[in-house]
Image (spheres, rainbow, N blue to C red):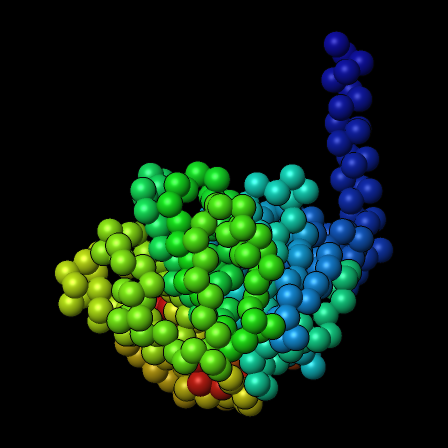
Length: 363
C-alpha cells in the first residue's frame, strides 16, 4: 500500500509534465489541433463530415454520400441537414434533405443536391466535390416526417428536388406502409431524380406511381390531382416542391376541410454577397446596431445594451455562442466568412466574429 501511494503522485506529475511539454511543442497551437489534423472527424464542437462519393442522379443532380463525425446524433427520415462548404475562402451554409435511411449499417448518410443557376454551394457539390473532402455539418432538423403511428393511406406529392425528403421516408418506411401513392412532377423523364428507383418500387407493387412531365403535361394543379387520386381526402399527404404548387395544395385542402391532413416542406434559396460591416439585428430583443467590419458581434451587442452571453472573449471557451439566423459574418482571426440564409440557424462565436453584411442574431 505504501508503494502504491508513492508511485501514483509521481505518475500523475509525469503525465502533467508530458502534457506541458506537448503544449510547448505545439505552440501557438494546442495538442488537440494536431489531433484534428490527424482525425478531423473525432469528437469535437465543430461537427464535420468527409465526402465518400458523389454519384450523378441526373445531368443536374448528384447524391453526395458522407461519413459524419462521431458527434452526429442521427436523423429521422424526411429531416434536413445544414451543410457548410468552403468556396473561395467563404463558408456558405445550405440546407439539404437527407435521402438515406437512418439505419444504414455503415453509418453513412446521403444528401441529394440539385444545382440552381449561379448556386455556389449546389454547383460546388454536384460539379466539383471530390471524395475525401471535408464539409461542415449541423445536426439534423425539421418536422417533415412520418408520425410514429403510420397512416393507413399515404400520398406523397412532389416536384423537382422535392422528391428528396420523400425518398428518405420511402427508403426507411415503405415496407411498413400499406397503401402508398406517389405523384411526382419533373420537366422530363431524364430530369426525374430517383426515376429508376421509384419505377422499380412501383413495378414491385410497393406503391402506385404517377409521373408527370411538365414540358408535355403542364404543371400539376389540385383539380388534376383529385382526378389522379380519387380518394384524396382520405389520405394523409406529404408535399414538397415549388412554392406555387404548395400554395395551391394548401388552398385546396383548406377548401375541402381537411387541411390537417396536409404536411408541406418548403425549400428556400438565398444569395448573400459578403462585404465589410453592416446592420446587426438582435431578433428577440428587437434592437439593431450599425457595426464596422472590425468590431466583434459581442462588443457591438453590448454597446447596444443587449445582454450577450460571454466567457473568455478569445474564442476558446465557446461561452458566447449564439445562433446566426441570416446574413454573413467574418472570423476576425482567419478572415473566414460564414453565410446563412433566411430563417436558417448556425451557431457562431460572437467574440471572434464581426458583421460581413447585414445579419441577424437570435438574441
